[in-house]
Image 1 (cartoon, helix red, strand yellow):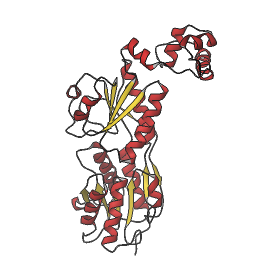
Image 2 (image 1 turned 135 degrees about the vertical axis):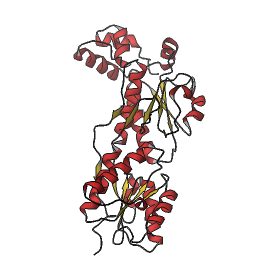
Image 3 (image 1 turned 60 degrees about the vertical axis):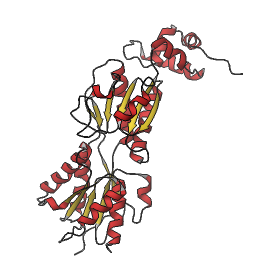
Image 4 (image 1 turned 180 degrees about the horizontal axis):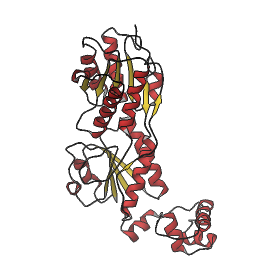
Length: 331
């Protein structure tokens, strides 16, 4: 039977007091020790395979050592990627991540008493203020930014929208329509701004009929793209604000008898493993979603330590992933 390694065993191996080990392993930012001492503690904990007694820590600190994350749709690969990054950061700090889906206001009672803080992976213009989430649980918006009194961590969606549109312009397209996301979500509004900014910079006029609002799913993308591709003159390219909506847009083009990319080029937003296996493979804008999840969890843990935090945009820029769904327009 494996002997239980205690905190004092790690302390003895590292040559420090047990309280120092506890604060190092809990990520206490207020602890001031030499870097080599910190490394010695971490090395000893790894070598001895020390596993914190979470139940005892909870009784001692009145903390659950868990944070929650609420997302609108567990089937959405983007949220799975964000949650993976958040889980890595939480685990490094000794926390567990609990993920639920649905409305934040509806799901918080299910998490009450089980979490120390909450990541809210959904927010629209109707997002309630912090107090309305109940329980006084420290909260942070992830992948959303709204004036609702809750700090946020986001990626540069506007730059991603600009990058996608600039690529289509560089191929020679001028009739570029946009399947936009729901405009009560700031991510969709920022992607639309990026699209409009790229067109304005290139001197391409944007008419209101060239933008069709859609839900972030296949059905919404299919309906919006169908409307746009029936315009006269017809768009030669579509920038679609979500990878799932882009799948719907591709289906709409085919049902209208259009070839991709010969008759219409399509660029999606967010990358996913399945994008490379579509026919043709989908060109997308890859965003640093896992890093956003990591930084969101780190900021929430800082909030739990009562450290001041501000709205944060991940510094890693968007990346264009060129595949086969876009080409120069036919003459």
